[in-house]
Length: 310
Image (tube, rainbow, N blue to C red; front, top):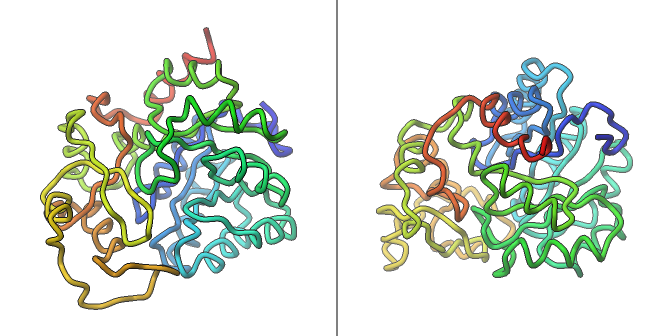
């Protein structure tokens, strides 16, 4: 498949850029090496750390396609995006808010910008400003949510409203899900949660065990100081959060453009990926309960790409 001038995209599968050091260089490189699009989640990283992650991923992935995801809600959004562009990644993905400036930055650098959208209206705006592709993300997704509608509803609407490629996202875990999205008109898919349970994902083992042990009823909606609802796996922290019993912020780095300051979400996400689940928020997609084993990315990909071989 040829996409944004590149001939070496073997499979139109984007590995979701999960924030605060869930999607790091080893995972992104492994996905890129399998012929997909590997993404580093830059949100929560310092500039120097992002540069190092990009360099490491490039060494590991060789000629694979690598990108960076940056959440618009973070205060250093522009710095992170411009750093990724300076490092000549293959693409930049942005969501959790909408930036008009990012498209001119991308054009100047000659690097495509992908935008995460949840409505046909925002999809048309993003295309107008210069998005090279769109990611139609439904309510089944993990992390911060931009809609209460399922992917299968918003995808055809978005696909019918624009002319650029549209990737489906939200709750996709296997080749059957991919086939369904492609039948609905998707040009490709973005998958995040499945790749957490990979050998290459660098989160703590306790984080992965929490994924493995999750039941359908354990997946909950939580309140985020970002101002958007979030999808997570129930734990002590989420239960305390539902009762309004969360740790007070003792030191604020002013990391978000707008923050309710009810609790520090950056700290909560960082805690969980390091294995401190009692003090951490564990974001995941709705269908995490369907995934029951940790596999190497190569094996996960072999299972996923059956959708393209039918």
